Length: 266
Image 1: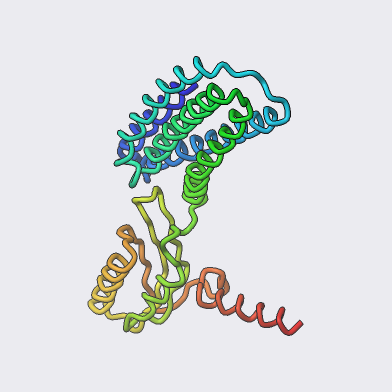
Image 2 (image 1 turned 45 degrees about the vertical axis):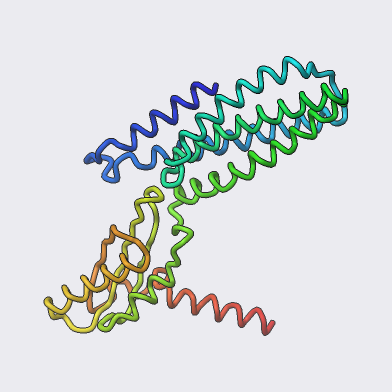
């Protein structure tokens, strides 16, 4: 099963490097995100399985051969930790590699827990160390897998990246002279390193030279302040869909504020 997971991660990593096509205009960047999501989900299921076995062994202790367990687990720990350390550098920027890193580190934690529990059982004869240390391993795996699961799920749901506030982006653009309003603003990540933005901006006047300068100013400001490099900006002097106020963050924020005041008065 571990070999299959590794092959899936490797295939997803290769797939993300493939160029965009007419049918897949964003390319295959999401392949790595899907792999990261599945890997983190499997890690959480593994942690749940270990926890259930651990609780069962707390209630119904079973004999454990500490010597053989320690020897096999020590070899496994060394192998998994070595692979995890090799993946550590790339894990900072690539969600798929990060999932592989945590998978190897999670396996290393399991092996280390077995080594420690085997040694404790050899020294004391207390088999209760096995489930207790297993539960500590569960906590370590969950601590690494849960943020990975949440981040990959957010990308798949096309949520606004956690370090960017859509309302802050809108306010920054609206503060630029010549901009009247920003609406229909959408910010999402194809993958964590590829953040996209689309919006409709109402501007003063219809002079093309001024509009081009304003567009360049907006692009520079958003790129500098928020790190968003890929933008599609539609500019106009009049809103083409007056009724669709759900796209206007300023109006939407005011509505939520008014609703909050109504609830307070009630």
